[in-house]
Image (cartoon, rainbow, N blue to C red; front, side, top):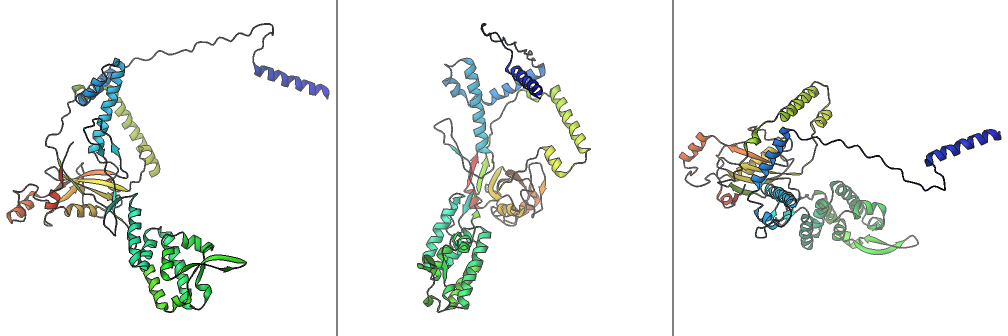
Length: 450
């Protein structure tokens, strides 16, 4: 038995020494093992087509930013040539990004500022979503609207505490919490109305678990109880004292007042903030900057043709397979993203654009109502279409389902014969500029620099 143990012990030692690496004599100095040089494959030279494509791209970039980055190149003239070239490219890309951000409309869920490189030019402010307070009708951002609502409700509480606190419960909390809170308070009041002399119904222990979870955590519930006549008192409980909201017997002599207060609570309207359309009216610039492109830009390369053919072959192969809707979306690379708001610009035949902000789940009828509110007469008949010429006529369609989010441009078209008939009857005055718009809308027109 000992022989077997010795054999396996020797095998284990041999295995450990092999893992430790190659040994050497202690009297000799250990020399590090020379590492073999890595084999590097020579870099493939770009093809003639790729070289021409790169030259065309650099030419386009230089033509776009020849004027915009002149000052920057002068400031960098002392640097070496490679640093100057890379910095000028970054400056030109940044200038293009700022131009796109100031003229195109993106998702309007937040506010931001783009600082201009020229100190004489003001910073460009991206449009923010504004909400209208239902009490003071002031426009606030999403971060400030809650504070405005609380301020208005607190002022209302000073004059009418029961209705104001009922409105606080409905407006400042989630619907699930509101329903639970109203049901619990209704039970408190109904018990008091059924037996006003029972003291146990006229006091609510503050540390009660049901009260804390269903009532105390709801904003506006405590002011409502105080408006009913409850007062915070320390009352005997078990072996000590605890805080209670206590309603004195004299306060419930007229139970009809409690019934009326309960009716106000259960029938209070939830006045939520509404979306500010933030209407803006633009007139496109008469002379838009012209971008000159070299002839090589329009040349189709052989590599591009091969790539397009490969994509079409892949699409045909995918269409021949049986796939679910989820698989088709995944193959097409469509990533679902939910937008809360969308900015829509409506362009008229004379290049006037009216811009408004909408909820993504609004119907198309909302856009038609917005456009009609800007026209001077209801007799004007028009149609809306997309930039691709698709006519939009289903008023009940959702904007997100029509792919009109997070931004889009719609085009207005009308029958020339009908417009001429309206002019002949004196309904429209064609001699006036922008004759189809209301006077208040005309005052908002500003030039849109493209």
